[in-house]
Image (tube, rainbow, N blue to C red):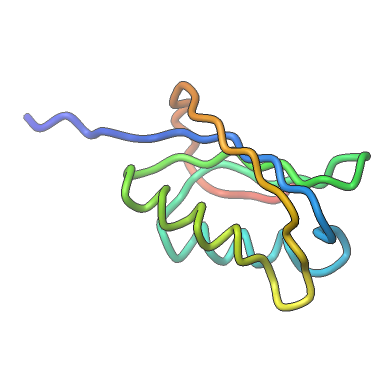
Length: 93
């Protein structure tokens, strides 16, 4: 039986990323690339994301997140790999 390899990343995004449909764009990208995890706004006006899935899809997802939504401006992103948590879906918190 083939072992399924997954990649997990935690992403923090700085810039104009709240109240500009950024979380919606992230959620759409997660569905497009079959990513599980979550996205949430933080009180300090950053957005935090946990995402996991096939390593190639996670890499594509991270690139898409960097593009943001039409109204957002991503100034900086920190991406840290972590331990897989086996999320079953992707949701906004």
